[in-house]
Length: 428
Image 1 (tube, rainbow, N blue to C red):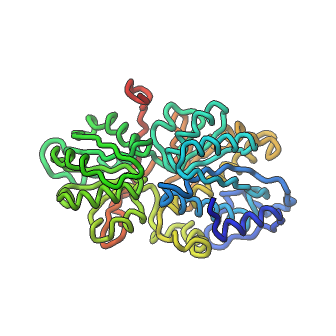
Image 2 (cartoon, rainbow, N blue to C red):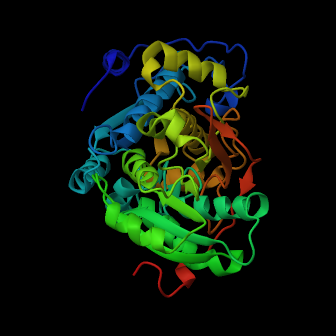
Image 3 (cartoon, helix red, strand yellow):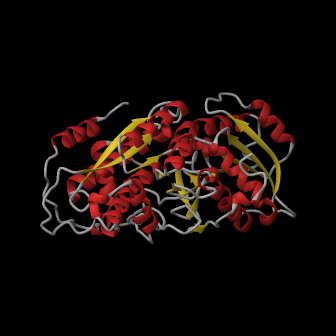
C-alpha cells in the first residue's frame, strides 16, 4: 500500500492515541455528524475500527487513489478537529486491493477476523468479491460505487450512491426529455466493462428499455486493460445508434472515445457515460477538445458549487492531496467519511448498551438502518435507509463537458427503485 504524508502522519497519530479536546466549529456546524462532544466526556483509548477496502493501485487507480485519499482525509478531520465520534476516535484499517478479486477476498476476511465494526469499498468489483463472505457472516458494509447485483436482493450490503443501473435510467430519462428530437424510439448501444460496473447498466437496460421507450441495438463488452476496441466499435457503428452509452472506468472509456473519433463515429452520436467513468480523469485522458460535448451522470455536486461542506473539504484536499483537487471522486469519499461517522454516532446513541455494546449487527440495526435524511453538507443527496432498498442515496445529475469542464446541465434526478430480483434473467 502506498501511503502519502497525510496517511503516515495520521497513523503515527493513531499509534500515540493522543487525547484531543473537541474544538468548536466555525462556518458549517457539523455537530450532527458526530454528536455534540462539548459535554465533558472523558477521552478514551477505545477506538472505533472500520475496514476500508480500496483499489488504491492497479488498473482502477485513477478512481481508487483519490477516493482512498479523501476518506482518510475526512477521517483525519473528524478525529483531529471534531474529537472523533462522541469522544471516540475512528480507527481506519486501510487495505489496497489493487482491483484484484483475490486480494479483496483476503481483505474482507481480515476485517471480520480483526473485529472491524463494518467496512466500505470504493468499487463494485471489490464489493462483488467481498459480499458473499460478508453476507454469510452478517457483516455490514457499503460501497461508494455500486451495481444492482450488490444490493438485490437486499441483505447486508448497501450502496452509498445510486448504482450504475440508476445512472443509465437517469441519463435516458434526461436524453428523452431534453435532447431527442427524432421520430420513434432512439437507438442505444451499450459499451460496458466486463464486471458489475458494466453489468449494472446492462441490467437496467434489460429491465427498463421498453418502459422508457428506447431500442437497445447492441451490448458490447470490454476489459479493464483494453487498448483496442475496433472490432466492437465497427459492429456498433453498423447499427447506426443515436446514443452510445459507456459504463466503465476512465481508462477504458478514454480508449473507446478516442477510437470513436478515429472511426468517424463521434461527433455524430451522443456519448453518455455512467459515473464510474465520468470524472476529471476522463477529461485528462481524452483531452478537453476531443471530449467536448460528451455527457455523463454523476451523483455529487461539482467543486465550484457553494455548499456547506465544500470549504473544509477543499482545505484538507489542498493541504494533503492537491493533486486530487477538482476530481469529483474525492468528493464522493469525503462524504463517505462523514457517513461512516454518522453511522457510528447513530449506533452509539441508539443501541441499548451504547459504545460498549457495538458489534457489526448493532451497527447495522442501530446505525445504518437509522439513517434518515442525513445531510453530508450538500455534497450529494440526503442519506436514508428505506426498507427493501439498500441504496442510501437515490439522486443523480447530468453533466456535459464544455470548454474543458464538467458542467452540470440538470437538476437532481430521483432514480426509481427497480425490483431486479423479480426478473428471471437477473443474476444469470
